[in-house]
Image 1 (tube, one colour):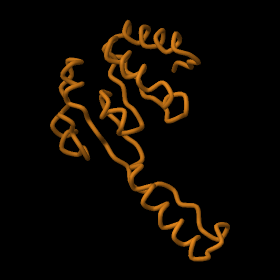
Image 2 (spheres, one colour):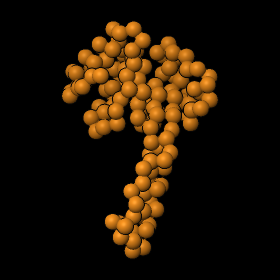
Image 3 (cartoon, one colour):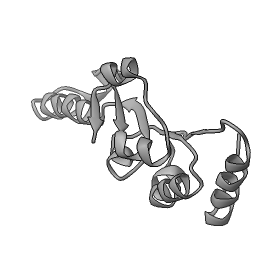
Length: 131
């Protein structure tokens, strides 16, 4: 586990991971990760560290794999809440809902650049494979 607070610490963490055999990274979904996602994706590629992200857009931008909440589904469900509130429902009376739909997205181009072969079984269960 690496706690980082700025760009230099992010790079140092990836450099350290690159020196470890069979190392990889799993990023937590927080505001720091979101704010630094472009740097993180670039460093994961530069240091050849397989990295799992929480958001699909990070894989669309060159990350390896994401597994996380389907944000489109969250927004669709939020729209029903807005509709209910606009029709007079009291927000305090509406139940809190946990995410129910998750998605696995794999970037095959990134996998190949890292020299990784994603097993066919994993590709088969992916919600999307980016070629």
